[in-house]
Length: 199
Image (cartoon, rainbow, N blue to C red):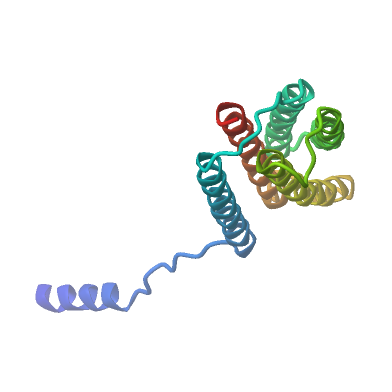
């Protein structure tokens, strides 16, 4: 009897399906997007270092407003963190406020970057000219383009929040938005430090 019971239990274990590991398609797409951006900027910064080593490189002062815009972006990352926490706690008021603050600070960052470009032009640094200035415009411009995508996700999150479609049981959109936003913030900090150090 015991042998039969043992065989039956072994057969049951063998017949039980193994759990299938699945990844949410939106999170998967987000991580593909992040990996692509990392590869893009890794290639660009490598090209920057190679070109800088060749000489004929004009050094210039990075406008002060880029420091302020960095602080603004870091604050927006804090408010984005609070929005995710609020979603998990079903605090709709804080969620709406935090997402709105993040969006406003994101727009402020873009405006400050534009004013920074104007300051550069007053120094005589243009997109066409010495490679040092060209790279600066390309780096900041590419980051701004990707930040616009982040703002688009923020708008979608804001709309879904006001439609009461986000709560503690449905935080996927806020999670994706927070991950993308924090990544773009870290990317800017990396670029800014890189440009400060390798002027």
